[in-house]
Image (cartoon, rainbow, N blue to C red; front, side, top):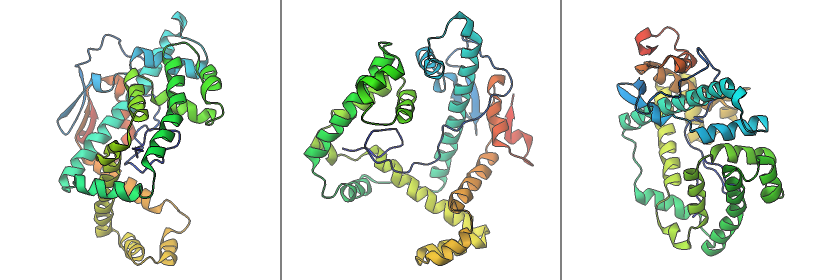
Length: 306
């Protein structure tokens, strides 16, 4: 079936998932991290939940691939310092992503949000109503196979990213989009996910899709967050009333010059929720995660680096 997810695909329409977690944040503190850091080392805790280094570790081959994409050549002995700086930068992003993921799961549990398989199947049937399964699966395979070939060529170092694009994908998608794919699908396991997708059969559409379930969870999560915001924000409450009444004029008046009014309110809510969490970063190289949350006026123990 056509998976609805935030992962890049050639044709599949992405459905909204919560938080773009690969946020860019600058390097803070030291720009090097010992390669000898054991994978079981706890690098941070969020509300006493431990995050081991293995959950954010950036594999050596993935790091080298990222270097090649950025610089157009394989790293050499003179690039060691730059590679280590890249490692800290990418692993800091992954740590921030993991922190957000833990807090999101906490919020889902607090509000008792759940999506049943029946709900998933109903949404699935509605989404794919009128679609010829056999044709759609065949088209998906046709779309994905050149992407998989290109990704394997880069992963196996048979071609650089530009040559792989020119060989397999030039007529199928923009080069910039290809770079997004090649940076995301940077391990054999992730490429295998695409292969499984390409090998789907029409009968797989009768199984609940995890991507659609994530989208439904996100919809419910946004709903309860909107209601929570409205408890203290009269203007936002009026917006929700206008939305329920499909009063686009009133909605536009409340939004003003900010078309991302609702998204901004939700992000503010998430920022406040994050600052309430007990976040402790235990490895100095990753303390940029704490600084990036910018929890001004909060008890320092709520977000610290040790």
